[in-house]
Structures are given as C-alpha cells and as structure tokens.
Figure (tube, rainbow, N blue to C red):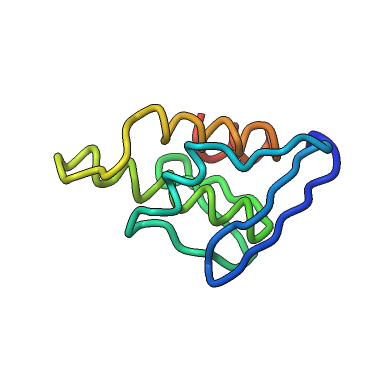
Length: 108
C-alpha cells in the first residue's frame, strides 16, 4: 500500500479521496462515478475471473475493482462504455497505487 488512505463516501459516491496525503479527486474519478456501472461496494473477497486467485479488498478497493470489471465487460461486448479508455486506465492505476497486490492479483 502507498501510505494512508482517506476516503469519504456520500450517497454511493466518493466526495474526498487522499492517498499518501495527495488529493486524488481527479477528473477521471469524477467521470467514473457518473456511469451507471459505478456502485459503492462493501469490503470483501474478490476473485480473478481467469486465474481464480482471491484477495481481500477494502470497500474502496472493491468499488474500484468492480468498476473496472463492469467497464471492461461492456467494452469487450461492444456496449456503450460511457467513459473513455483513459478513465478506465486511471481507475486501474488508482487501484495499483492504493493496493499493488490487488492490482497484480486481479487486473494485471
């Protein structure tokens, strides 16, 4: 992990996010939260659909991971993705910054 994480959720959306003291409320995070596949998730066990590897995630990590899953699922089926690839990439790299083990287990 990359230092202290401070997150505030309100009504299913992040209203404040700092990682290691740095503000992460960026344009791509705001875009991600406007999609219909953004949903605040609970902490729990996530599983890589290809390898079957599992890892325990915090609510923030699970929210980011599930967003990435839903975005990629829509993209791979040719559905309207609502936000560009750059937003998906930014979200993946946010997970990498927050929890590199989760990124490597689930998305890499």
